[in-house]
Each structure stands twice: as structure tokens, then as C-alpha cells.
Image (cartoon, rainbow, N blue to C red; front, side, top):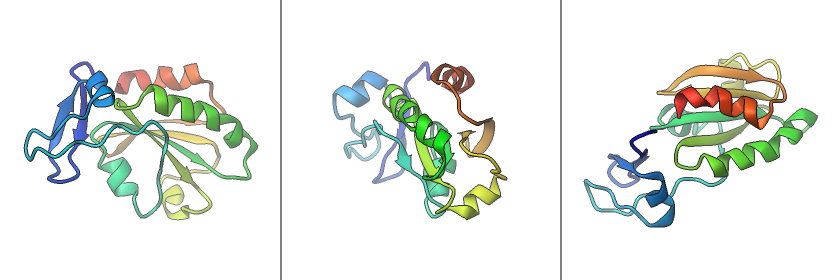
Length: 147
């Protein structure tokens, strides 16, 4: 985001705009209640059927969601790229992982038939999808419109 990232306060729910370097280098506080805001995640968050609405649909930023399974070879090959993107995009995009075997309801809801599947969700809606093993560059290219 050109004007900073948005961090939701865990105490009062207010959305606070913070410059990315400030969110990582120091502890910004909520403009409404004064509580220290959570740092942007530097690793993928674990998304489940139970927390999907909160973490993905309720995210103030775009979400890159990796739908994967432990037995999937291409998923294991893609995992280091997803982890690197989580570090690189921290504060600008939420990067999450959803195990399709353990979370079949969400996988079925979105009609996931092949893995790995990467979904880009913005404002609670799926806006793009990449299926199969993807390069870091291909993923970043598709994400560019939502940063």
C-alpha cells in the first residue's frame, strides 16, 4: 500500500495505518485506545476452517493463501517460496497456509480440486487464483495489483 499498511488493533478493533518500516522497527500504538499494535507476521499464518473468516475474510490487507497437503510433492517444493514471501511481504500482505486434508470445508467451499492452489483474497473475496507449482516471480506478478 502506498500510504502504509493497515494493522487492526486486537483490543478495540480499530484499523490503524502504519508505515511498513515503523511496524517492523518499533512498536506502533493504536490511535484509538493506545494499546501496542501486533507486529506483522514474518511467517505464514495457519488458516483453518474455524479461523478462516477472521484471518482471511476479515483481513485489512490482501491475503495470499496457500492451499496444500503434506503428501503433495509440489506443495513441499513451493513451501520455501511461500515462507520467503511471508518475510518479504510482511505488513503488506498476509500470507497463510491451509491444509486441505484437515480443512475440507473451506477447500470444498472454494472448489479446490488441484493442489497447490494459491488464492489471493482482498476485502473478503477471492480475486485471483494460481493452480500448480508457481515461481516466486509469477506469484509476485499476480500479487502486484493488490499491494
